[in-house]
Image (tube, rainbow, N blue to C red; front, side, top):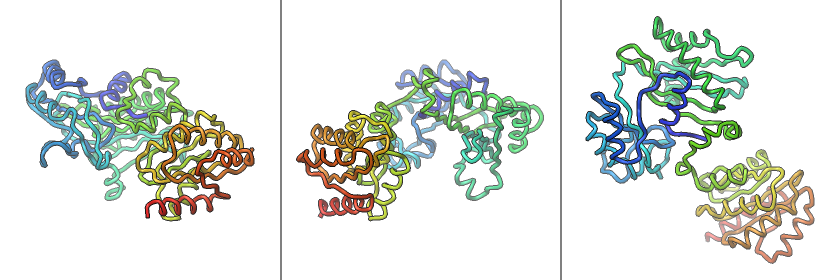
Length: 400
């Protein structure tokens, strides 16, 4: 689960991490009031969406050449004018894709006199099963571009969970960022605070870009992107309440309510499978035969009829879906349960696209009988290869 920048900074502040003062605003009037409360000679008005590249983004509804989603202004009146221009409009960045995201909230932040921009992030390194730090002197830039052009400027190290965070880790960060003296000591404290926040809140990603050195020699997190392990949210009700469903695909929201693993993709063949490995294989073979999957959907090993029905409804809610492939290998999951769920869903929402069903394993004969006697126009398949060919052929035939 992802959260907004202002929410991330509030969490980091609780762990003693230095962040700029700022106030969230949902209206132009609230943005102006926030600027007056902050005081100072400059303000930064930031669009709050779950995507990076906001400063270089463009608003679809505004004229070409208009400012992006991060704007530096001088007065509270300018804050209000810029807020009015941004709120309710669609911001398009490299990470949002061409559809963009509507800006529904802003973060009004005090201006900063920046001497140097740095990069720091934390993630779970799957290779070592440890929390890893990634730091670079090239802050304020796309880290992927830095990795491609100057990989020697990126430094990575992990923290042994047996020892936890130690001063030596902070010294590594300071050395990699070229910080010494008081700034080096600040880097040690910052590293410890970020690690505590990451581990105690079950984060999966923490990115500070840029981490800045100000003109008065302070380290400040000028931006913060945070993602959480969704499987650990039951331990953090305060974090779960920060979820902004307007930033998520409605199909993925519905899937989470039924504990379904669903990710929307750009293709046209909807997939319903049990087991992540089988789901990946199903997506691959669809691509092999010339089409693209519209989603990843794993109903799990113990899905109920209600879950399967919900999964089918989610697939059919995607207007890009031109055909559906149900591929079930029954182990813990029984084929008759899948069949009953599919039939129930088809009868509720209708079937406007070709549907191919491949069942194998536990209660397969019962499952096939349920589908065969349903009277619905379902195309049976014997194995995965046969199923993939049939759904691709059926979709091409419908389009012809």
